[in-house]
Image (cartoon, rainbow, N blue to C red; front, side):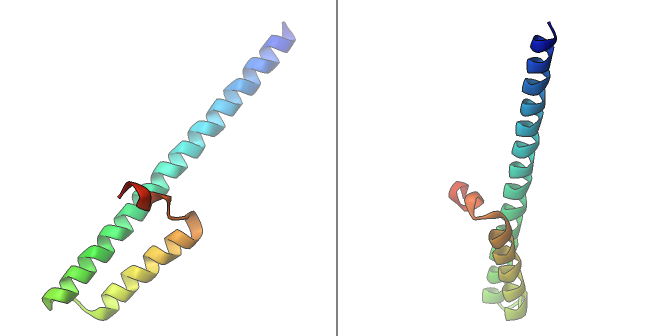
Length: 78
């Protein structure tokens, strides 16, 4: 009986870890998508004359930093 409970506990812990990992992935994808939107908005504003190259560059650097840290997986769904 103790062996069964140990296995059940291990499976529950494994499932919890997988769930946490999935939540982290979703949060990273959302953050990446938000940064991509900000870059697009900054570029559009710059092209229309109401934005600055500095704002576009700043948005690009933030996006590149996110990609360097978390990868570019969120771009595949864009």
